[in-house]
Length: 402
Image (cartoon, rainbow, N blue to C red):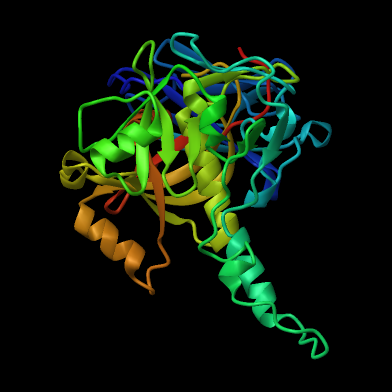
């Protein structure tokens, strides 16, 4: 989503949102001065565009989908700075809508990737996975797969004629289990591609505990005594590109930092696309729309910085604005920044039902900037709620790059 500058006091803002559940389009217009006899609105282009005139200034915006109307619209709030219209939908133009978070398309799933595709640095083009090094791509199960398997085993019908086969940790699917990388296989989760270190090249390993960078994980672990995660950078341009799990012996490349070959043309996912996919997955898994986004492997700097608390209001908003040319799919969220202590208290409390999401600190900063910028697409009356701000994060859809 492109950055949106705060509107000037003399500008007109149009924001239109598709409300599929009640089969309407809501159009809201913010004016620099109260509506008067010069204010007029109309529908153009066979119901595809909305135009408003005010004090000799004309502004247009496309609608999220066509309305079965044309011509002038009534202006019923003379003297107001904000005007609202509810337009009916044209039956043949109603787009499909997937209401369930678990049905949302994910950026770059295994079925999207070409077999034998190389994986490269998006910043400089250095190859991390050589052509034909990975023969198979596999989607990882959802985050709660181990817990569900454990639940099934504990509650499955008792078979008295068969001996018990030991504790859960020996069955390979306890909640403490980790999927380890396999040479020649690329595992795909919501935000990353995961590989065996032996398949990777042109990467360096490092820890927040040291400025030194190493060509292999063993050297980095010995030098830093890191027990959980190492960071990974491109050996050519030094971009931070992923993490290394010490427990699982697995290299994970962030999808927004890499390029690969896909079966059909589609835009490469951004960090915000992956954050939205993670939010939707968290809602599907936990039923909670409230999350705190915290940096993974927090440094001393991260611990004193403010964390991002999100509350998803609508997981599938389709909107247009005169600040953008085409309809966008997004999630609408309440957001605010909180201190680390408050963040930890929220996720540890059993009564708040707040989920924790670990994300790289630079990606959190991008999300913060995107949310802060996006609120200027909304009418002034909808940009805040109590102590929260309201923003939009664009949702990834499998479409060709612009």
